[in-house]
Length: 280
Image (cartoon, rainbow, N blue to C red; front, side, top):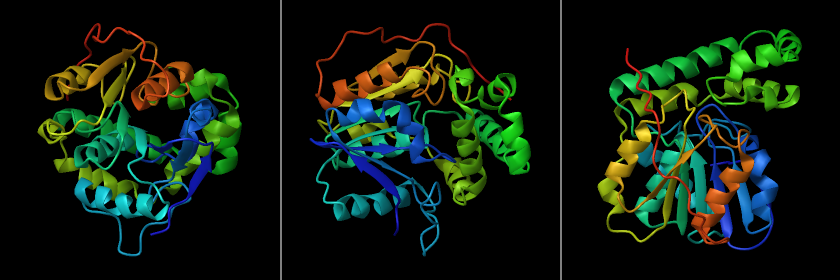
C-alpha cells in the first residue's frame, strides 16, 4: 500500500493523521512546533491527499483501516510511535491506542462518540462541502479570494475561517474533491462507535481535545468521551472548531506535546461549557 507523507525533525516519532476528505497539510500550522521535539510524520490516509486507493480497495470498516495502517508504520521503522489525529484521524488514534501499538494518543473531536442522528448530520455537512468543491477550479480560486466567502465555505470546519489564506483554502477544497476514499469511509462510519472498554486495559496516555465551536460533531460529545474513557484526559478547547490546528496552533501543539511527555502538563479547564445538541 502506497502512503504519501511528510517527515521531519528528530526524537521520538510522532504520526499525525488527518480527517475524512482532508490531507496531511492540515497539520502545517503546528508541524514546526512539533518537530522541535519529535520526528514528525504527517501522512495522507489511503484514498486521500496524494495517497492512492489501495489495490484491494478501501477498508470496509475501522478494523480494516487500523489493520492497514499498522504495517505502514512498521515499514517506516516505527515501533510504538506517538500518534495524534482529528475527526476520523482522532478515532484511528484511539483505536491504535486500544491495541497498545502506540506510545500515546491525542485525539481532537474524534469520530465514534456520536448518535446515529449526529453522524448523519455530520456526513450531510461534509457531503455538501464536497459537492461545492466540484465548482470549476478557476471560479473557486476567484471566490476564495473573498474573506467573506472563505468564511462561509469553511465555517463548518474551523472557528476562524478568515485566517485561512487563499492557497490553503483552495488546496483543501481540491483535496476534498479528489478524495476518492470519501464515499467508502462515509459508508464505513454508519456502524462505527468507539468502544471505550478497549482502552481500559492499556496504560497508553490519551488526551481528547474538543473545540467548543465544533459545528460538525458538537462539543457536547466530549462529555460522552469523558464518561466512556475515564482514564483519558478530556479538554475543552475555547474558540476552536472541528479542525483546530488553524484556530489555535499553540494549544493544539501543547496538548500533543503534553501527552507525549515532551513538555510538562499544564492544568487546563476540562469541562465543556454550554452544550450544543444537534437533532434532525
